[in-house]
Each structure stands twice: as C-alpha cells, then as structure tokens.
Image (cartoon, rainbow, N blue to C red; front, side, top):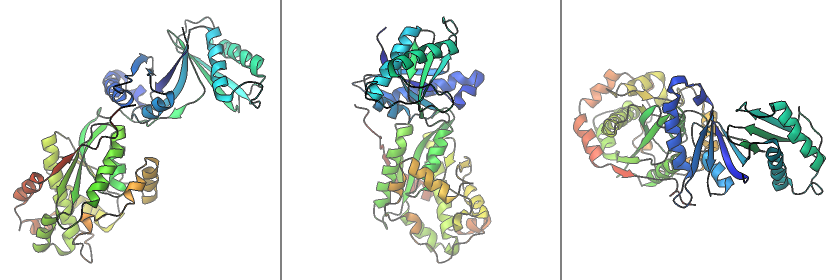
Amino acid sequence: MTPQPCVLLKYGELALKGRNRGRFERHLLRNLEHAVSTDAAPARVWRREGVLVVLSDLPQDELVARAREVIGISLVQPALRVARNPRAAAAGALRLLRDRFGSPDSAEPRRFAIRARRRSKRFPMNSEQLAAAVGQRVCEEWGWPVDLSHPEVEIAVEVDEREVFVALDRHRGQGGLPVGSSGRVLALLSGGYDSPVAAYRAMRRGLRCDFVHFTGAPYTDPSSTYKAYALVRQLDRFQGDSQLHVVPIGTAQRELATAGAGQLQIVAQRRLMVRVAEALALRLGAQALVSGDSLGQVASQTLSNLVTVERAASSLPLLRPLLAWDKDEIMAESRRLGLADISTLPDEDCCQLLTPPNVATRTTADELAHVEGRLDLDELVDKLLANAQVHCPAADPRTP
C-alpha cells in the first residue's frame, strides 16, 4: 500500500448514544460530506469502529480546517495511512518526522513517545510491542531520547482492520451533537453578541437553525440587516444552507407606542417579535424558538419580563441557551467563534427605537394584554410577515 494522507475524525458524546447512535451518525455523515466535499474534490468517508476516515484531493490543512467546523466531531487528527504491518508503521512515523523537522542532522533533539493503540486485535504485536518497535526505529534514525511522561513529540500509531494510521497532531473539534439530529428551530438574531452565540450553542445540541432578524425600517437604516447577514454567514460554517428572514418592524413599534405602551414598550416589542417569530417558525416547520436572553443582563431580561415575553408564544417553546451565562462568558465565546468583530460594528438597532426613559422590570402578561388589546395583533403579524425578505448567506460556495 502506498502511504496516503488522510484525516481521522473521532466522536465524543456521540459514542455514548447506544441503539440510537446510527441515527446520529447519519446526520453527522451528511453534514461532514457537505463540509469537506467540493465539486472539484469530492471527499471519501470511510467508517471504522468509532472513527471516520476522510480522504480528499484537498490540501490536508484545508481538509482539517473544514472538518474542525463540523459539529459532532470531538477530535480531528491529520494522519498517514499505511499498510497494516510494523515495518510500514515505522516507515510512516519516520516520514512524518522528516516532513515536520527536516533531516535528523539538522533537527534539534527532542524527547518523544510512541502512543500505540489497536482497534483490531488481530495483529502480530500488542500495543506495547508495536510502540517499542516503532520507537526503536525513531531512536536509530533520529537519536532522540524516549520520554513517556513529558514528551515534546507524540507519535500516535493506530492499528485498524485494514490499515495502520500514524499521526503527529490532534486538534479539538466542535464536539456536541450533529446539526439536525435534535430537530429544527428558528433563532431570533440581533446584531449583538448574545443571540448568535445562543444560535451556535443550539446547533451544538443538534438543532438546525433558521434565523429571523427584526429591523426598525423604515425608521432605521439597513446597517443591522448587514450585520445579521454577516453573522449568519459566519454561523453557516457549522450547518450549511442557512436562511435569514428579515422583518421590518418599525411601523409596528410606532403603533405600540401610540397604543400607550409607555414603560412597557420594550417588553411589548419583544412579545410582538416572539409572536411574529412563532408564526414564521410554524410556516417553516420549526419546533421551537431560540433567543439570546441572559437572566438579569439588562432591564428587559428580568425573570418576570422573560416570563411575560415567553407567554406571547402560544404553541412553541422559547429556548434560551445562554440563560445562566454572564457577559464575559458570552463575549469570550463570540471571539472564539469569530463573531465578535461583526457584533461590535455600529448599527441602528430596532430595540433602540422608541426606547422609554425607564423600562419596566416587573411586568405581567395581563399588563401587556391591556396594551395589545388596542391593536389587531393577528392582522399585524400577517402584515409584518408579508413584508419579510429571505436571504441565504452561504459561508462559501464549496469550491477549492
């Protein structure tokens, strides 16, 4: 067998799913093929016991980068696929060392360890014997000392049913459950830090997200829509084929103010957004709504206000993945996901439109019903959805 570069993908939580594991794996395989295949370089994915093997004509670094964005994978390991015998395993390890460090004469000595594992027990050596055999070849050619406790270089050697995989590196994946394995939701997306992070956390629990963004048009400029588009484009890396629905709500906000919302204006607006989002979600076949609320972060997110807003949804649950997160945690996650630079861009947020001097922090659904009763909410929701626009901000065209 000619040595062949590949990428090994290993499960985390998915490995614990027992009899339901097959369903989760089907979602994972579909998402993986979408992420790593291009028209010019279709990927081949082989299933092994607890491991996926990916081969592609893409450069290995790019293949690793794409695989690391697939939710449901905990470990991404670029590797060399070699013949299933000790000699080939040792030759593969030496090749990886030459590719990384050059020649033994020019490289500085490093402490190393061989970590051998047999997924297939039908092999002429056990794990310790294989590690010793490969380690001896490294010592002979490179002259490096063995250090099993604190090595500077770790060489993984994994024996499978048909081949041996040799690797130097391992990268953390996204973890979680494959997108789509838990259902479909509609995420309410603003231009700030919280809601896009909440959408990502929902994806990590296996939820496929569509997105709805409320703009203050015609009283605000389109800057918030541009931000929402850019955020969805970033989030699309983790699921593909995302849709963004943009709903202009400025006129409806004026109607609420005219109806005498006063200090209840912000909560009334949020309840209207939830009503519109629920109607849209039902049309899309979504099973829940997702918001970026964090308990007590701002005046509109007190416990009583969150309860009042949630009761605007009559048939779908409102999920809040960040309910117990503080702002520092949310911002750190936003930076890790590459969302923070977008979220900090200036925009005219619809929530800043008609904000009262004082925001009610303790509200009830009955109080809001008194204001909402002055409007025909069903007609208003239909009118808002009729003016909605749909965008498809794909992360990339899947070309090399």
